Length: 443
Ligand SMILES: *Cc1c(COP(=O)(O)O)cnc(C)c1O
Image 1 (cartoon, rainbow, N blue to C red):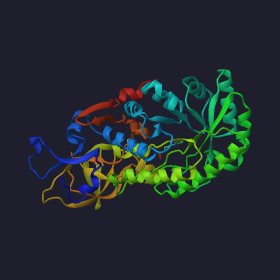
Image 2 (image 1 turned 90 degrees about the vertical axis):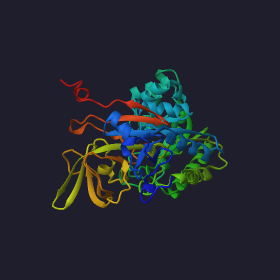
Image 3 (image 1 turned 120 degrees about the vertical axis):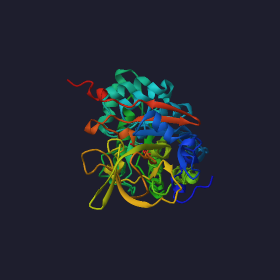
Image 4 (image 1 turned 60 degrees about the vertical axis):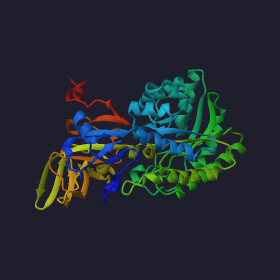
């Protein structure tokens, strides 16, 4: 099918595709309905209600496969960053594909272990504030690597491991002091950020760590931020890491692993999915070139770039209103469901689920807003949309990463349901919350 006009931009194959609807409800042949794989989103919304997160299993698999292909020439493990989307079914799907995991809390570790107990040996544990209790659970589970971010944490880990009469494999997360040209809230690789150990101080810390009998110095780790779309920051970071690995080996350390972190961005405004494999190859070159000849096992921690375009948030228009000429679409999804626009002023494409090809298709500009009592509750500002009526369904695209994972219950709004589509089957992977669920635990 050849899509017309702006429809082209709204396709996210193999996940989200406009197709002619088969059922008679939309008999006008000009109507195209957004499908997730082979299921019309109209049908999924009817069955599970809105607001609703819908994910494509094929899209997730395909994007993970692009990573595996791009790094096929080096020894590596993809450790999906759980915080991007931590639904158990998505973790299970990834584990089945052989994926490892990057966790940043005991809770995330517990999710991975619940999804697939055997995945523990492919888990790396990152984060500046790991507690002793979290470390102990991770040690018992037998995870692959701790990315340690301070000297205090190092001694806490050494103590926990000694108590369990085991050894903890550690990498220091170094702060390379490289600017990442991304939103300040998701940039992490500068000296002023709370993350990591300054590169210059890291050698001394490695020396201290190597003396502790319950620690096994095994790697170097970095992560410079998120939603980074240019390659030079990755290249520069890995060059610094490569230098450090050489120094550390000269110092007598056995550096087996380099953890390159995550952070590869996606294009929210003009996605070009056909190019993803090519784009990951460029990223792979930026990461691998500086490490050439070092013979390390590479760890990668992508989150957003695996699940972002594989998910959409489906919402229904409750009201259309106009305040002195300013037009609003009040929809049933809000900042508690998808906070990225409010928090980062992020852009998400929004398309009507049914594209009517009729002559009436005008363009109007709207603010797309939710029902929450905050002016910061918006999904889009001044967005040009085809004629939309009350009751219509909209799809907010590229919402698979940092969407549901950041959802809250603000305004006592139960969190959305989630559905995973694979081919012709759709499965609820999270029930819609009820208000009773929200009040449980309160007195
Ligand atoms: C958030 C995070 C990631 C994933 O970042 P993406 O931008 O989603 O790829 C990877 N590693 C660490 C340590 C993180 O904090």
